Length: 236
Image 1: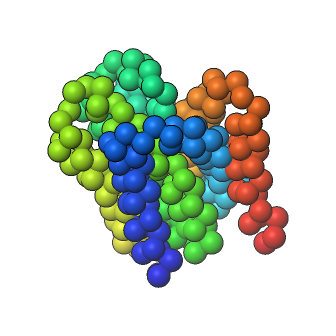
Image 2: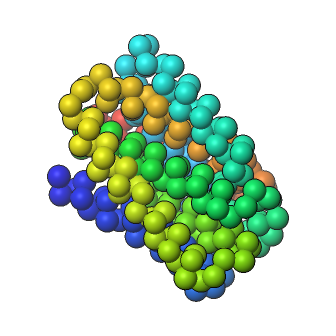
């Protein structure tokens, strides 16, 4: 359980530090965040297809995987709250800062549920999911504060919303691990749902963004993420 609690702490600070980089106006971080999105896209694809969905008894629970993908597609469509690392990014978020915050917060909560479900299945799967979430959270935290800044929120309000957002992933992990221990069938359904959400995040949010860069370097980061995600499977 020590690894689980460590993952909770790091997931909080990953999201919080990503937002603070923006609040402190550390502009040099933008290029790193773009490359991080590329690596995260590859890693999340592999974790979904090679780890989470195969472990979820997909032949019985495929509907939950489809639901996870579809629900997140609708949320992303209504909130337009995907990752945002460009200077002109706020112009692509017409839905208001609070709506974007709510969408991202739900996203963070489900990420935490996925992490808790992973640890409930096995320590190895939990660690793999946790690493992907930690890498992915910094760009999302940065995106959140970018959107809130574009909407004229005061610094104290932005800091409060960032802090709440950062706590939701650890909270989701704790709640899911507590409740899903009771019923293994529910755990498999939750794992399928989480696998669908990870597939949506990677394919519908991150990959279009990294392809928009038109830089070959980012493609290498995507492939590196895919390879890193496959390594645990290859050495089982």
